[in-house]
Image (tube, rainbow, N blue to C red; front, side):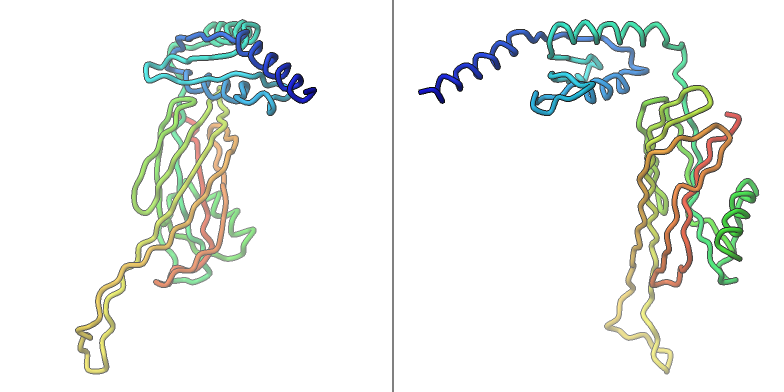
Length: 251
């Protein structure tokens, strides 16, 4: 019987905590509604068992209208109201944006790997040669993407696809970046000694994919090598692949 009484007491406490919660709908400016929603998602946890320092029990949802619904205790609601008031007091007329340029560059010791590279990458490539030894470079893919602060954007293409979300504060941006390089190589049927094509052979296409995902802090005007890895494809692309990003000094 003692087990039952303990269970009833625990249930009573849980119901009491549910009763004390309240639901509020907040109208948040579209320029920073996604950032506010994600911040509240980090602070509020659905399961009280996982609540820790800096978190509170509650739920948050982003409606299609752009409004944010919060279900939590009144004391927490009061803190959220203060937070939103502070954010609104500092909002700017125009949301800052970041225009980031991306390159996927192949570095190889083979002379035949040489190709045209933009002059703006000269200093970066010189530093890569200092670290890795004599290399010849060619650009395998490039992309440029503009997003407002806190908003996610993606440019999809062949060979390079880029996704970014950059939080801009003055001349500094904290960015979530994902890059995917897809190399397609076409192989024709081989000829026999007489120069004839095997009628049973077909043209085939093979793909080699490389991906990079990371969070990084970038200053305006800065070039960063986000990562590097070796690559070797059936078609003869062989060397080290470098992922480079730049936030132009002037936009």
